[in-house]
Every structure is written in structure tokens, then in C-alpha cells.
Image 1 (cartoon, rainbow, N blue to C red):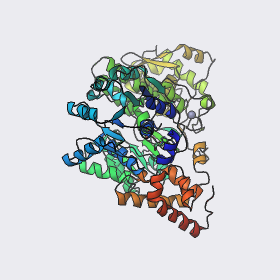
Image 2 (cartoon, rainbow, N blue to C red; image 1 turned 45 degrees about the vertical axis):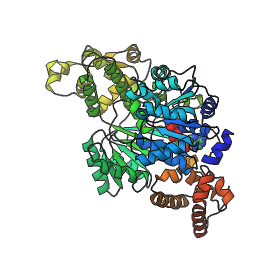
Image 3 (tube, helix red, strand yellow; image 1 turned 135 degrees about the vertical axis):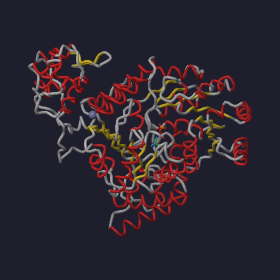
Length: 608
Ligand code: ADP
Ligand code: ZN
């Protein structure tokens, strides 16, 4: 039954991990907390069951813009869905209300502030509600990164609908947030389903920001004609970078909170409807969008917490196809974040902010597998087959250039820390090793140390990077208000020559880079030319219908079309992501496009 619904409405032929269990929980009327990463397929967990049973599923969703997109996507698949929020006119609302009461609507999206109103609760008591799905459920928790007070009042649901199942969905994994969700919503022995936080289709790369623009261009050149987001930490960076890239012939649009609502909406729509490829934005962008085929996310600056990085980079590749996440960080930015956090009032919130910031710094400057660092931070391990090499990060792909005599270099740095009596921070230590004549070095007589200038031929910045890498690998630690460097027990092992750290050479980019395996697979047998033609058609359709491009078809569907090249209705129906409604709405035109293209280019048709 579930599989049949999945096939008929969505054109999918199987479940993603934990989806089936989550759907069973809904159908059986239990409570549940479902924790899956972005792109894990949480929405389907409540949408598919709603189509298998009597009654109305009410979905609590915090973002009005996302609500509309979700409803549009459902309707485009032939599913009767609607939303109720403050953007509607009285007449629109009255129509939705009557459709809900008549039982036609299967899924109703409601904002939390509206749901907790007495009149709404009374209205829902008259409707035949079967379940409540609470999306972005971490918003109930003050420990989450996105606390919303109105979520706290959702405990009303349990009181008013004691017999119905309540289901909470989130991508935030921490134990504490999960407990908060269970307690605040009054869940009863919920099924707790926690998926793997790894996103194997994302390829992570980290570089120190040097030329900035040049580095961004190099990445963009790998993604011609694809959709991507460039995150900047300041509005000024957004404006400058967007302008520079436009000047160099890239189609970009800026987005930040300093722009007018109109401008922002216009640029967001252009991106979603694929009239422009690239959006250059502050973190103000992204919360309300759900574009499945973002092929790359570039961070032009480092976020202040690893949670943020995971969430922002996670907006790429939601369709499960490969996507690239590049982080460009700078030391200056790290200092700025540290100072900013330091200025906030002391207390647990500040401690938590420091904790997340340090994790972010370790991720950026570290030399351990990026997939591993991320999932470890969220308390998980990588599946064993990926533990040796994830095959999808700069570390595992061997794209990092490591220093050959890292043991000796590490010893030099640690000796200097020791001779400075472990009372100085990284910056000072780097100056000593470099052999700087700055006043503060001379003032402490550090030009007399045997380690003075022993790394004179290495750029100052590289020495600082190495120190960070030694901290990241637990050879050194930073302590106290001034972040003085101290040698750890592991550090002593290094000084005794028993262990060797990994240290990065400032990489001179090698031409022959290994390609991530995920890329090769997902393009297997896909005719790129046909894919581009289909994309053009999708763009035109989306424009004509005024909907986001991915609502017409996702990238997965387009690639599958360009792989199978179906010229018959039956063939088209077996394409991934083509359900009954999409077949009826778009089948003819896309088949015509395929037939034309294959004729013109002498490409084989109906190949699978
Ligand atoms: P989340 O809300 O967890 O971030 P979504 O529900 O938006 O994720 O799903 C991400 C993408 O994966 C969507 O494009 C969705 O249609 C697709 N998807 C979900 N479940 C499946 C499945 N079983 N098979 C194929 N694609 C799926
Ligand atoms: Zn890796």
C-alpha cells in the first residue's frame, strides 16, 4: 500500500533509510520523533501515510514561504493539499476551510502561531484529523539553534486531541534537543528514529581563502550552468562578490537582509525558477527554500558554528545526487567570531557557542576526513565501509598536500612552545619560529631562544596553520583567557619521536585530481546534451506556470530521462520521479523533446 502510493504519486520505487519505519509509526497511530539530515526525506514520512488513510494530516511548519512551496509540490503530484496562514485573504481561507471540512484535503499546513489559537483548535475538532506532523521540531528547544516560543504552546495538541498520534521531525541531532521535544510536546513512548547524519553525496573541500575571487571562479568553472549558493558572512561581501562575478560573466544575484523585500523576493524567485544560476547571500538566505538540485554551496567565509555549516552546506544535493561543498576560511574571521562570542554575556549559551565555534575551527583547519569530523561531532560514526576513506572529501581524495617531515616540523613548533614556558598564544609562537624582529618578540628575549627563526623560510600564515592543525590533532591545546599554547600528553609523545602529526603544505593545486566516485556514477549513461535540452524545457515550463523549476521535475528525473531516453508513455512512466500526475501534465512535451533531440543527434532511444 505505501509503496504503491509512493509510486503512483511520487514516481519513487523504494524507501530511503528509516522512511518505512517512520511511516508505519504514523499509520499505527503511535507517536514518533524522526531525526534525519536535510534531504533525508522527512516530508514523505507523513505525506505518504496521509494518502493511505482516512482523514486529514495537519502539518505544523514554521516558515510561510516553505509552506507554499510544499503545497505547490504536492498539488503538482496530484495530492489535495492546502495551507492556512496570514498571507491569505478571507475568501481564500473560507475556501480552504470548506474543502477541509468536506474531507477533500488530505494535508493541511498550518503555522504554529495559528495552530494554537482557540478558533483553530475548535475548527480542527470539527475536521476529521488523523495525525499531527510537526516539522522543524527542534524549534521547541532553547538548546536548538532556532528556538521559537510559539512552538512551546504546541503541548495544546496533546490536551485537545488525546487519541491522535503526534509526530515530530527535525534534522537537529543532539540528545538534549530530542529530549526537549519529547517533553514539550507530551509525546507518549514515541518511536525514536535517528538516521545517519552522513550525507555521502556531498563532497567537502576546505581551503584557506587566499585570492578569494580566483578561488571562487575555479569552483564555478567546475559547475557551469548549475545552481549554487555562495554564502558570505557580511552584506558588504555579498555586494562586492556578486558584482565582481557578474562583471566576469557569471549570472549571479545578491541576497541579504539589507535589501528591500521586493528585491529579495525577485532574486530568490529568479534562483528557484532557474533564471539565474548563482545566489550570493548572507545566511538570511535559505531557511525558506527547498530547492532540491543545488549542486554546490561555497562558503566565502567561515560560519560561527559547525551546526550552521552543516545546515547551510546541507542545502546542496537534497535530491541525493552529488554536490560540492567548499569552505574558504580565513584566520582573521576566526578571531572576529571568537571576539564576538566573547562579548556575549557569560553563561551556558556562551559556553555552547564557544564549543560549536571550536568545532568549526577544527573542521576547517583539520586534516581528518570531513565526513567523519561532521558525524563525530553529532555523536555518530561513519559506516565501516567508509571509515577508511569516504571517497568524497579533500582529505580522503588525497587532494591535500601533506608535509613530508611533519614529525620534525611538529617538534620544532612544540619545542618553541616549551621554551616560551607555555605562556604565549599561537600568534606570538609563529613570530618566534619565523624569526620576527617585532618588539614583542624582542621584549621577552625570545630572539635568544634556540627555536628563534627555525622556520624562517616558511610563510608566517603557514606556521599559524600548522599550530592550528597540531591543536586539532591534540598535540597542543589552548588555555586561559589569552589562549596560551600548552603541550598535551600526546604532544610529549611527539617530542619523543613516538608519533607523527599530519600537517598541510600550502597546496599547489595538482592538475590530475581524483574524481569523487559519486560523480561518475550519477552521470553514468546520461546524455549531457539531452539533459541540457530537458533543463531548458523545464525552465520554460516552470516560468510559464510560475512555480520553482524543481516542482516540474527534479534533477534526478531529468538525468534518468536523459539516460533512458523514453519515447513512449510507458517508458516515460518508469522514469524516477514521474508519477501519474506528472506523466499526464508533462509527458507529451518531454517525450517530444527527447524524440527530437535523439533524432537530431543520432542518439539511441529507449535504452533501458
Ligand atoms: P528533508 O525534509 O528531510 O530535508 P525532503 O523531504 O525535502 O527532505 O526530501 C528531499 C528530497 O528527496 C526531495 O526531493 C524528495 O522528493 C526526495 N525523496 C524523498 N524520499 C524519497 C524516496 N523514497 N525516493 C526518492 N526520492 C525521495
Ligand atoms: Zn573523507
